[in-house]
Image (cartoon, rainbow, N blue to C red):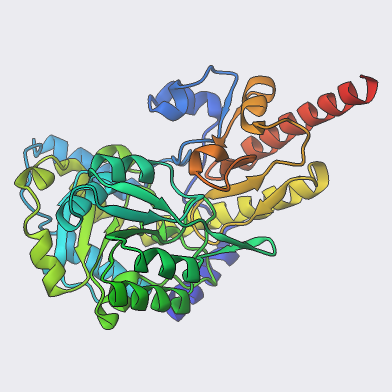
Length: 408
């Protein structure tokens, strides 16, 4: 951790002079890319919704993909191969987590990893706890695994959010089969403390609740913040747990379809050994090689984090100057900002009003479950100019609405 912070500090001093990542103008990106971020809405809409970066891929990932295609290496997979030790090296260097490569399994993406782990660990019609507001697909994934969702909302405390451990214990004691942990938490960008996770692990062990920890945003933890993997704590407490993760968010390779499912202990690894063969076989071989390359591209990752953290501060400044009624929950990981828009005067669904009238596409907070109504999630992995333009458009909308109200 200290090595990482020192290296980051040195790189930060040089950031004014040299940057690995240069963000192209939106018009250029829109011409070049065909993902939903660039095709779902009309060209006059600023796309700040889906969790994709505007940044170009790391050169090492591009070179790896070109090399694999030129080698006609486009077949099927039956296991993680070199990806397991590549991730283990990254996890040890970044977080001090000693990952047993034999505990690493493949899945097409993190969502598939969650569903397949639930199918193995939870009986039909079982009960799975989640903590909204949280990543919206959690609801669908539990349903896909033929289980039912039990909501235990986050606890809002003086402008911040926490796991409601007392409510979780009540829920666990009432008969919960599994718990979906979002670590770091999406959409808030919360990095749970070690003490919080230790308490959660003890509860899971006491009530025999299987924990699936989604740690896909962990590589994007901001400098000065300590990310704690859940698996070692679960193992120490005697809790059953798996971690699902990928390079897809940290290095912007979601469409390459490769994720890891990692057992916290030997017994859970035996469970994961029962994953259907097709779970690995449906994973992209190009995605596997891209993930291997990504976990070695720490310079690119650190540069991306530098730009994200700069945008975190820029958004704070812009909101204070132009939209002080917005309550901004600054993330401590990832590139997603959680915004309380309830005091802007834009009605019950400010997301829709901002999309329709300001032509800025955010994520509707209501989709994140209990406690999300009136909020929106904004993507910070863009150029500063895009962020400035988005705030300017929303500011103009709020001014128009205020003027119309005053003259009504």
